Length: 421
Image 1 (cartoon, helix red, strand yellow):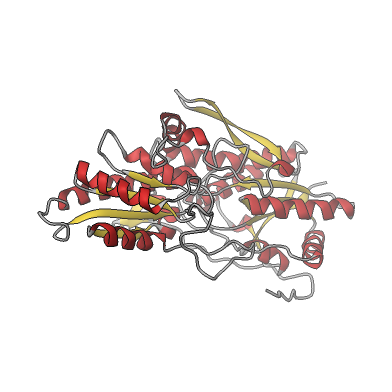
Image 2 (cartoon, rainbow, N blue to C red):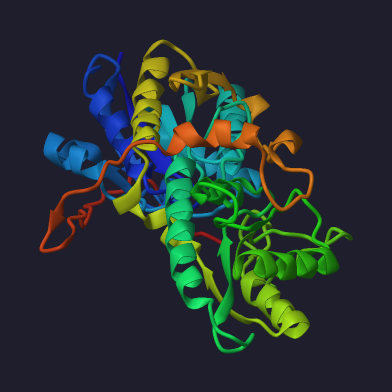
């Protein structure tokens, strides 16, 4: 007998997150014998707890295709950790009330952990539930997959930004004195524990002397004296220096260079502010005029500059999620499996959730050059195919024509859920 299905998002958005949703929902409509109704939770797992459910049948094929070119999470997301058995039990109660037999959870390693918790409870309750984890994260830190959908588009955006700002800075760095013209630019990108995004900015470099000149990666302990010497040497050689730093860079004692007092639901420290800190160090040591910027949400919302390869990955994992589900698979995460570099070929696979939950994939040591401020040819060989191709959204009146999504929620079947933060 067909059962209902439920989709929910977890964590931050990516430029192509909605493309996976479109692939999922369009493919599910090809299997009416398996899916009676297909719901989406508003605002992720909190929407499941609160029965804030959307019937996706209201979306036309045209609207689903429009999702592919819209940034942000169309159904909303959240960062919420299931911290007590009552919350997990509430999830299962909601799924039972709505006859949910398929649960598609879209996120990173924290989402995989939530899937594991729910799966264990469903099994203990003898409730038939198939759980499929659809991968996405701009940090590219999910294990056992060649790359994470969302990462390649951020890599393309950051590398493009570095190439453009490098040309700007080079044109302004010809002053006769240190303080008469800008000499240094520092770009801060995301990367709590891993340096994949910062590393990908090196794709901007076409030859010796081109930016980025220095990369600061969480995998390489930060030594202030070595860093300042490298900045001075770079300016002496090329007249200017472009630096890309991951927000999670740590010193030689393992302490974050910059963090706030805030933490998210999963206990992750709120990061940000390492770029201005580095600029102050550079100014104090060299007297150079410096500028800095933080890519922040810009990098993960830049749908206008997505990688066509990344978009294809995102759609494919959404489609495959349905295909694996109707084949009876459960407790799996979809993966991208690279078959060759040149030409770049790939296929979608799957791995057990137990091999993914709360496991992080750092930048491999062989991808980091001997000096620690750059990446190797092996890294370039891995990264380059991921950013190939353009897939711009439609433009109207000079701006991207992104969808504006408003949803009507289903009437709850259960008593109200009182959320305690």
